[in-house]
Length: 585
Image (cartoon, rainbow, N blue to C red; front, side, top):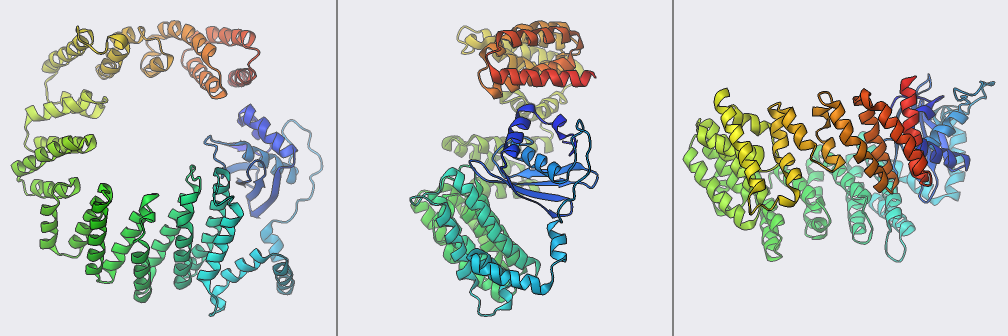
């Protein structure tokens, strides 16, 4: 969203704007400062504290902005509150307020540091370390390489445990606290990123290994619905991976031993993909260290355990990665033996199928695929069935088997959800004259299916027909037939799915449909998000159908009268009318 600091109000939803302004006026914007030239940061206090960062150019344009709150819209009230605070700090008058003498702004943090002497800074550090033990710990960790006796692992574990204790209540971390804890964990991990940037690989690896050990158990007693602690865990594994790639041999060996030990715990697999990501790293390290047999032994134990516990996905994962490691280690005979033993697994079967196709052994590939489909049907794995059928189509194309190509492309085009890609592939196997007959027969068969005596679609016949035939009408430019089906619908959202194909050709017919359905939608809406959706629809129609604008404006004014006791709806109506008026100016 492009906007200027002096006039950002014009670009922001009025409700979000008002809420943000209230936060600013109540003094809930804290720790505001220019962390570097053009980049401002602040904490906005409320039920939870959220960190906001905004870029402001020298000319006053608002650049990138972000907030770590859970709001999933473009711009939240916390960002608005900070925009107000920055404008006040920079003494920029809003566009509609006369400019006064510009007040002097305080130095940016970087410029302040430039003005402080080395002795002054040392004196401050000594004094502040006595007051704040966390500051002292951070400082010691940052400069750990200066002290060869400094225990990084202990320091990291102490910091994490302290943070966990801060945000835990009765051995549980609630939803709000989990986000705050995750932010603290990410700050701790930043030190590891700093070590990596300075090529301090050893300290970086020690930090990451301690971090992963301490953070993983937290997920078992935290409400991590927003995934923030999981993200913090992923960040730790990702950083360890980056460090391991650059590590010397002796350190790679230490990391490999660490991973082998940690991965004995089901914990890493039970609460996400952490164990799988760590296994990938362990496999790569074993390859780098020429210790493939170590990994194979680890994988065999894991496969056996997963089967005992009936974890099919986990056992399949370890079998696949075992095959991959054997392949990368050029142990071809063992790979082939493993594939033959585990041919019931889709990934193992896929290897055999691809090899057969590559060597043009198409009949062998088809036999493998047919058997694979049978097994997938027994296991009720529709995604696997579809994968095998698509591979059969691929073979049919290679063999120029037109009947088989037609069979599969028709099935994929309209047998599941509609696919334009497969539809056109199906269509291209016929001449134009042949196709007219084929598609008319198909349309008639679909219609017959909906009206048959034993049809299960009779209660929702019009909707089902539109869903099945509508996409065909669009592909064939049969818009008059499409309109006829759309006119039989009673759901506004269903009709809107076809709006872009019809509004230029049939504006009056659509407006007749929309008018009554919009009134019904307004009557049934009872939440702000429903009102916002309604106004979004109205605005889209207003833009696309100029001949219907008078009708839409009259409807909105009518809603303002009859729904005047719905304040949220009144807000949204005011917003949309202002938006329409602004465009007309």
